[in-house]
Length: 235
Ligand SMILES: NC(=O)c1ccc[n+]([C@@H]2O[C@H](COP(=O)([O-])OP(=O)(O)OC[C@H]3O[C@@H](n4cnc5c(N)ncnc54)[C@H](OP(=O)(O)O)[C@@H]3O)[C@@H](O)[C@H]2O)c1
Image (cartoon, rainbow, N blue to C red; front, side, top):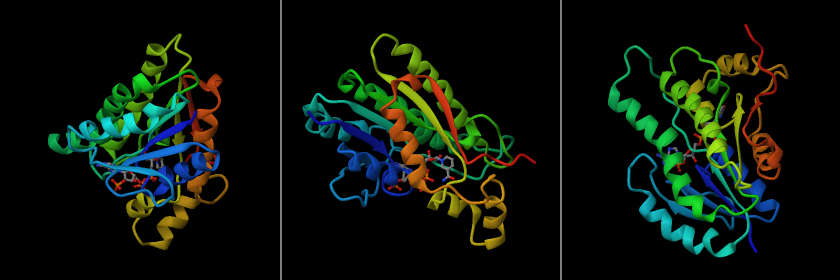
């Protein structure tokens, strides 16, 4: 009986490291993103979560993969857009696109995965430090990451009595392309961000993957918001 991890955005970064972590522990892994996951053995379903209707392509793959197992299924809502924008001037279509990937896609995926969530299964959300605070210039990201905490709490309540658990892991500054693209090429900017953790370094994607794996296998964390940020220095 195979256990499966169904991860969105495992083509790089935290998602890729999470795919590797689950696979190392003997789980089968399915990635949902536009590009494939580089980890050998991962089943890839190429969809663009920003384009409504993607679930029609995923449904048969789920049937053929996790649907055949009967083991645990861990759904990891990891894919996200991180855009520079402003709460007072944001265009509505821009916000709708970010909402589609960051908030609507996890809800659609939950509905699709629900029949496959057996005893011991889990739904994990990847939030952010910005799930519970805001900084300037990333309003759609802050808004959608706060929404994920609400969604996780609603998930916990709506799954009561099912022996399926949920949690939201909130990474801090993690060394991935998302962060590198956001910071730009200036080494001084990177150094200043490193100085914003109490350890003076960025988090490795594998460290977040370890936390996600722990959540998947630790039902007592049901309903928890876990900050995995090396301790952020507050200014
Ligand atoms: N890195 C950090 O410092 C940091 C901090 C806090 C929270 N996080 C959170 O951690 C998660 C992973 O972040 P990361 O840093 O690993 O990001 P990343 O390197 O940018 O990876 C993002 C992943 O999301 C997928 N994705 C983006 N748009 C998509 C779309 N339209 N359809 C399908 N997949 C899409 C990408 O796959 P394709 O391009 O192949 O589609 C990619 O695999 C995100 O939820 C992020 O908000 C990251």
